[in-house]
Image (cartoon, rainbow, N blue to C red; front, side, top):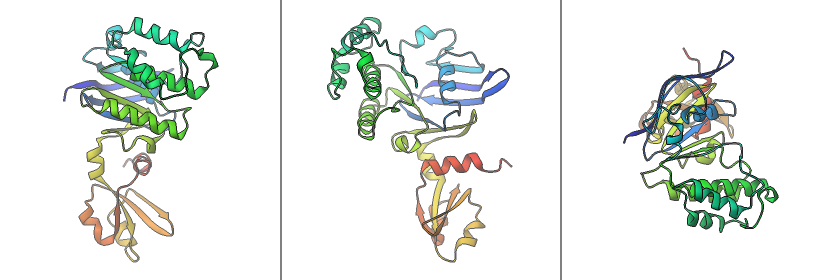
Length: 285
């Protein structure tokens, strides 16, 4: 698959304080990438560099171009939903739909109305009268109605209740799992997207902590619920994390096969939150 986004040694500083350090990654066409990490990890800053919205050190190419020099061309094939809503609140929903149709050649009015028909949003309503959750739904409907090669969502479900979140992710996957379009999701809500993504990028303190396909993650990380009497034996296998759960010891391993670990306890696939905590807290040595 060709690469839609490539960075090498990308670094961003604010007043000599590094926000991103030596970030090198590749996002392939047709993938659904989770850019995951806690608030303040550098997710939004990295996205803004990828889109040419911020200056940076190092190399970056988005859709085959330098985003700082060709940002206007880049945005013709990219849709970006930032973590802060930026809609013209004085317009009605209908006026906003017509505005989008007039400025973006890939915007589908039919698609936008189809998405909005699944909500309680009325086209006659002015945006400033909508609730925060409705504004989020509207913003996402406009984004999904734009047939872009690359869709970037930064904390997209903040402000939505659990039911709306599930509906949103179902719609996103239905639209972006065709293998042709690419989706980059930045969020700190790791459990919400771990079963949706095809590639995982964990970012912590501005550095890439883990960058693997989900197939590799499933293969490389195993969790063991220890059998009685096997705790010390498991410790000799050098787990990257150990914790107590329901009165039993649970060990997380990297690079150990299920067959190798099976004699010592019950094998489970660990949640990404456990993997993230382990790879960001272990001793660098």
